[in-house]
Structures are given as C-alpha cells and as structure tokens.
Image 1: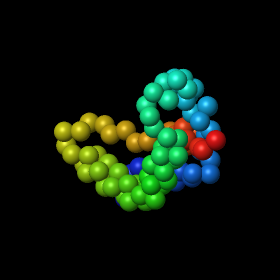
Image 2: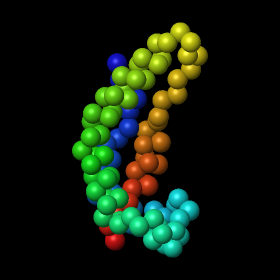
Image 3: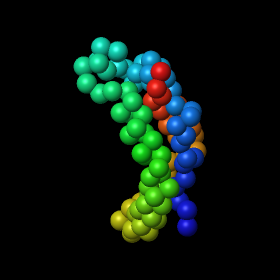
Image 4: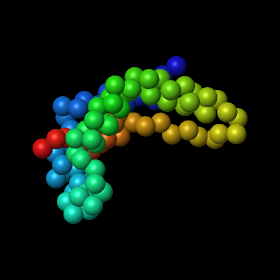
Length: 94
C-alpha cells in the first residue's frame, strides 16, 4: 500500500544560488559566514537523490504503520503539490 508519494527530485532542475538563498531568507553574507561551499551542498543533494528510492519506501512504511495505530486520529500525507514546491528549493552550482 503506497501511502506517501513525491516525485523524484532531479539535480538538473535545481535553483541557482541567488534565488535559493533569497527564498529561504539568507543574504550572500549570511551564506558566506557558514563556511559551506556551494559544491558541498550540491553534493549533499546529489547523495540524497541517490537514496531517494530507499527513503520513499521507508516513508511509505512508516506512514502505513502510523495510520494503522488506533491512537492516531489523522495522518497527513505529503501531496504532489508539496513535492512540486520542494523541487523549487534545490541548490544549483552557479
């Protein structure tokens, strides 16, 4: 039973650094102060993409177990719309 479904993210539709930082309220100065290299963030995202199928199966399993628990009155699923919004938030190398 598939309970939770999001589209597989693609590293090719990631945002550029400027729009990504603006969306989440970070200035370039804020970003620079973290010491993180943009390429490291992209590498983290690419690793996530490689694990996505496993993570999706784990989320489906957990959602199924939670929804069958008698103490749970409602379990909210992520929608395709949420997945589309998430895809807009991806970092991309400038």
